Length: 471
Image 1: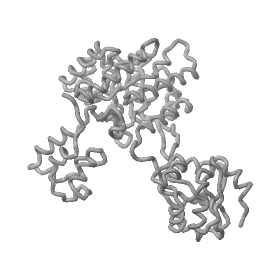
Image 2: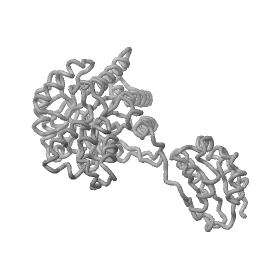
Image 3: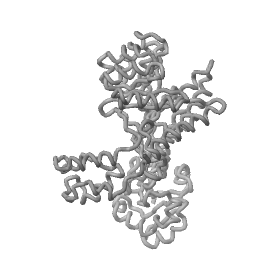
């Protein structure tokens, strides 16, 4: 059965069609639209909870359930959702549930180093375009092959880190020993992994403790489908798929082909045995003999980016080097933003530093990347000023000037609405160098003197030192 995206009218057909407004929308049609775009959840429609709508509710659930199942790992506000994909490409529909990134911890490490590593993982943070980019999970590896040590480390990690965990061992007894500890089980950990050899034992653990489990079937999709089918018959529904990561020779090409076939089979062909999130382990590059830390971090970041681009829903990595993780986190941020809606900030007046009535007034657009770059350059230059943020629909200076969103009329309206005139005793406005051609029009409409600033915001400090004279 081929999966096709549900239409607006199909969803509307199974709604109460009362336009009661209890969901917060003006009509059932508006609710249907947001439901398809996953901007609202079905439980917001309270009339559907009435017994007479039971059949319609069941049909709606069937219609809107994505072909790639959404799996929750962990508990509470730190829980991670993976999967839930409906389309192959994000221009078809905004991607949801960003790829989770887990960092591994080996049970061969001493306790002090494990605790330190856990703290580093949980505290890792990079600010980009106003968003906090963080790591999501900790993967605990049974590298020692000791059942007792693995359980001990699982407990140690849980006590020192609030992030969701992955228990990594092919030994069912090691997994059992770990999850039979209450504090570990309460975290709803992901089990890694069920294989051709241990599927029965690991499957029974997943069923008994109601835990998500990964199926590991290296480069054998037929075996993977068989294992999925078998575990589903056992009553295990929360599954992730790991088809193995190979990167030497033609291995990388085979890996990418496998990932594409899994996702295409689920979405385009409706194959329920492959309709699960994909887990990949770029950390395997560290398994090479005497790995070079810098080279291995580089290779891991490179491969992680490729896998993220090719449908990986969860990555297990090893490096904690910021320079290696930043490109992966940045790529994830870019993929999981709305491709239709530019990333923007609220327009208006920003007060940076401690400006006074003689401080400069600058203007920029509300495109997030532009705004945060300008703000950062002003703050790093220790400049106190007023910054006007013009609503250009989330477009950059160059694009909005060319497209007619950055206009003299818009600047005039912003000056009036922001109240900046009451904060300074001068009427001087510094515009971006890329908006230089608007200088005359802005002066005519605002009656302010316009100074053309630098092309690059990194030069604002030197520009002000050279040209800004206290009025």
